Image 1 (cartoon, rainbow, N blue to C red):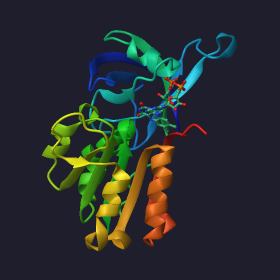
Image 2 (image 1 turned 45 degrees about the vertical axis):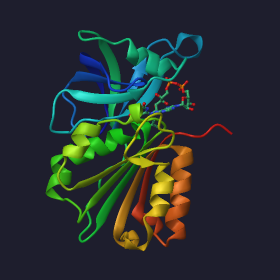
Image 3 (image 1 turned 30 degrees about the vertical axis):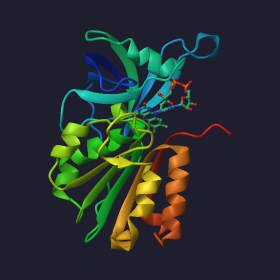
Length: 239
Ligand SMILES: Cc1cc2nc3c(=O)[nH]c(=O)nc-3n(C[C@H](O)[C@H](O)[C@H](O)COP(=O)(O)OP(=O)(O)OC[C@H]3O[C@@H](n4cnc5c(N)ncnc54)[C@H](O)[C@@H]3O)c2cc1C
């Protein structure tokens, strides 16, 4: 499906955590996409010399559902996120979609492991909700989400409610009585040991570049083939 320009009407806005918000919208013409793909939002006049800017956001909702939902981390001083943060029901914005090939590729007799940091959970939520995933479910699904504090865990209630998903939020610096895993997703992966079916699993990594690089290093060290590792890098760690 080639990308096309969309006029999007905002239908909802809600804070998901202290730093992440959700924007819901209905695009015109209607958007057909595969779970895991992204939209390129046009940020009017925010570029050099008043030119428009573009920013990419993974679609967090199912291809079969409406409205379309995005899950966005508010970045201080960031033009894209501050533009989206001000949108309210009835407002309009423009975007181009769908883009990207970070989609679930079913393979016979394989497990799937989704690994995200922060809003990198968005494409995995879309995949897990999609008919494509449900009809072609892997042998087992593990979904890891890395955040710093417990208040930043996204979609916890709904992820816990998915039958067949082993949902593991990993909190690296919990502030209170966090009863879940304490540490980073990379610590959790290292702790899994030889019971985990490393060589029979397809890994999908999404979020910050530093996490993705470290996870790839761990996986290749364990003998996981490069073509079993799929990735979507949201941003690179500053040098
Ligand atoms: C394919 C793709 C899909 C993406 N999907 C999402 C998404 O679903 N949700 C989302 O929040 N972002 C997503 N991003 C990141 C997004 O495109 C923007 O880079 C981000 O929102 C910052 O834009 P900005 O203009 O506000 O700030 P900028 O001034 O462009 O960015 C400032 C800095 O913020 C940091 N940063 C960027 N994104 C994040 C983030 N998600 N979490 C923490 N720090 C960040 C980086 O260090 C970056 O250099 C995606 C990026 C790509 C390439």
